[in-house]
Length: 192
Image (cartoon, rainbow, N blue to C red; front, side, top):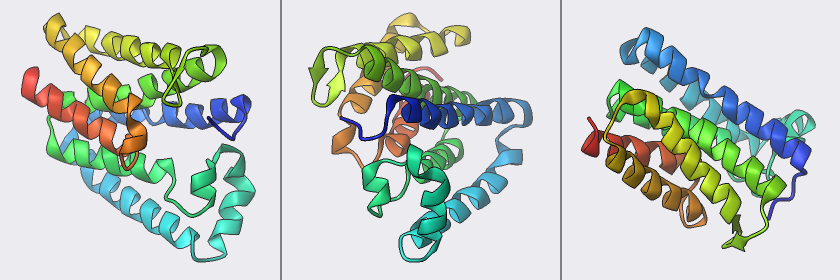
């Protein structure tokens, strides 16, 4: 399933979890204050990530980040961080602040918990995923929605759909890009 060790996966997901701070910054300062710096950071990171493949920058990147880099990223694909930043930027630009905050939390927390639970405790493997990791993603996503006082049926329905999106992530460009956008869209359509 994964080439990197569980310890390195833990480190990679701690970086992923740290991205949830963007939800807090969005909550405190609002969309209008953070969107332009975020667009700049996203564009810069993606440009550097793209250039990394074609220059000696790759050696520098791998010197410090190889232990948390997936095989496909080492071979030249954009890193999950590029897709994550792009997904967050599109979500914040396209949807309400509440939708964006929840979407960011789902991607940063639910996805991380699913990966760690699946790697550590997963026994039932379906499509290169574990049932235990998938269930933790679903449960975590429901918990993230609870403070927002939305209709429980709609919350469960949205969480089921985004869990399926995460489960079939190998059919997508990257779940870090697609999950926040799909989450934001569903929240805007059904809850806000």
